[in-house]
Structures are given as structure tokens and as C-alpha cells.
Length: 139
Image (cartoon, rainbow, N blue to C red; front, side, top):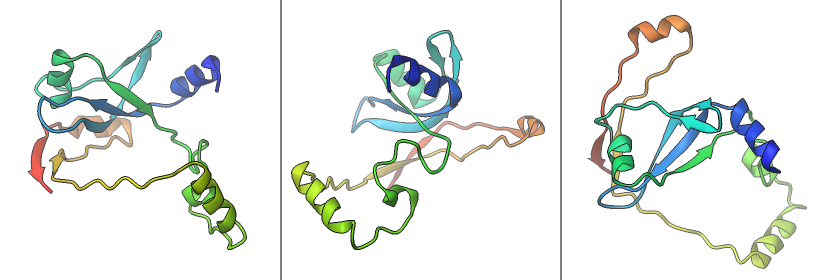
């Protein structure tokens, strides 16, 4: 994608993964909604939430804009679209993995952040929408 295509992709979508550095432990990520204000992305959160506190400490964050279409337009192979990979494709995938020197990263969770999801499917859902701060919970 060139710059115009990237900006158009961001303009056409509304959700992203918001990554930020926590004071202790590793980085954190959460799915959030955003709106555009010129070239800026605006994300609403409660002042008491970890996102807001982290940004006050360090304003450097990462955003991964989510493709809201399925199958994802940036998928690499049919596996990500939940299609069967025929045995004829397996040697090519294995060759590609060797050439790219692929590795597997094992992540052992030790905690999770519990924030009950709140959904808005229709305008009237906003009337009963509630928010909570998140809590760190043991894995």
C-alpha cells in the first residue's frame, strides 16, 4: 500500500489494537474504536484506565488498524481464511518457511486484563452502555 491507500484503509475502518507500555511487566494491547480528526486518530477512554495513565507517562503508542472485512484483505495464505490447504500446497509452504527462517514464539501468559465487553449494535444500545476500568487477573 502506498500512503494514500494506507490513509484510505484507516479512514474506512473504525477499530484498532492499541498497544502501550505498562509501568511494570510487558506491553499491553486492547481493541478500541477510533474516529479521525484530520490526520489524527481519536480514541476515547476513561481517565482511570491503564491506557490513559500509560499515555501520560509515555505518549508513544502503537496502533494496528483492523480490517473489518472477512476474509482479511491482507491475509498471507488460505489458512487465515479458514480454507483447507491441499497437500499440494504444503511443500511450498514448508519451503517458504525455511527460506524465511521462520520461528515460533511461545508466549506464556501470566495475567490477563478483565474488562467486560460492551457492544453497540443499534443507536438505542447507547442508553444502557456502561464502562468499567480493567483489572489485572492471574492467568
